[in-house]
Length: 427
View: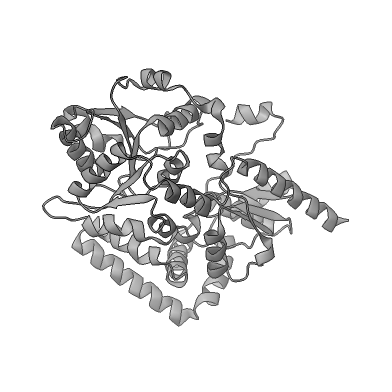
């Protein structure tokens, strides 16, 4: 990636790795707790309940006790504003924030454009540059990042967002933001889907992925283990149903693993499945899972997979929007029918998180609360794929604002206007 950028004439700098002391680390945990208490999002309690399912009773008691203790400390110390005054002090005393200040002075930027200001390395850089009174623009990368990510401690001069839902979330969570500084640009990461040059013909796609020519394809877009640990069981159920001829024309499952998932959790299924083809989205990073330079080939493979798979299944993923752009039937499993039903509530509640409610309520996604219902929806999708087509199209318009494949250009135009405004202010 660095060479690519340098070949384009860019200067490339690596961010320092953030180092924090125990006092600052503990304080940030309080800030995160307080932030999620304050944003009044239904996602907060849903995510907390899901996280609790994965830990034992003793750990649950410890987490609850810690949170009660932290909330008491926040109240005793003076609440919200006192907390952040203390954070600003410890930022200089108990971290390596000075390295980010030094880097900012070395770069001497005219402006800043940031996609993920909630990641701590980027947050530190943004905060260092904000001290230099330099104009800053943030394009929030995904539609869930305002309600599920930690507090962003800097007010930007411009925000580029996907949709009206995100605008309202931003103004609610960060009331000091000026509404005039928000611009809806859509979702540029979906622009590839509107460009036919990224699409393989179906025969080429099947040959490259090892898919039989004559069998229809069910795309199962897996999530990470932390979101839906029951997915291997669901895929195994589908594999058995295919073996028992419960779907027309004996389809095959294309299992697309999530880039930050643990492939080992699928190993048992890999050994036993008879009708599953495994697909890695791209070459996983060796040092940090999921961190890699995505190639054009990877994008072409994804575009072609979405286009040529007849039915799409995923567990409350952004992939529902990807698939709806291609007007393919979208199905979401929302059950754990194993004996203990440990994750049954957690699976159902995934579709009730704030960022996902517009999809859930759109009618363009069929949510299956049992395996029987999942089979019913799959058969319906094969027989009448045009069902819910208008709902899928409306879903795309609501979540992406635009369905024309030109969001990248809108982002570029917004950045150009932002820079020009900065030049006018400096005159």
